[in-house]
Length: 166
Image 1: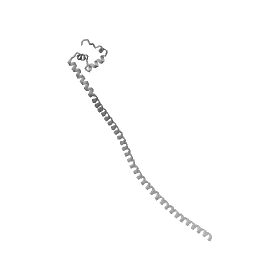
Image 2: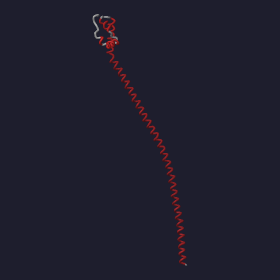
Image 3: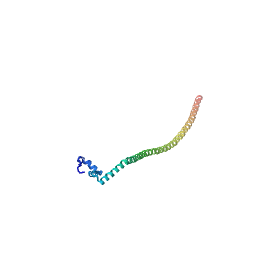
């Protein structure tokens, strides 16, 4: 057809260029219009590919999207698990460290109790011995003081008896 003119192509140069990237050219369209077998076969092939794509692409899209979303969820899940493992690992390490210190403190306090008991027993035994010694000393002093008092009283009575006799 030699009388048909493309009157819109100049107004949509960017869109025409985009169509050409897809393999759709003005010459291909004109070839089909003029009955060119190669052009008609190419357009028919393009149509069959398009139909196949329209039929299969939703299936491909759904399945690949599900795969991608599944991969996303899997990796997000792994990330959560690993983060929790890290947080729990820190908590466990802290609990272990706290337990180690508490265990050490327990041992030290038990040792301190043993030493304090030994020290307190020694002090109590010393206090007891000193108390007994003091009681014995007081008894000794009291006994001897009573001896001195008796001797003094005897001397005093003797002295009074001498006065009476004199």
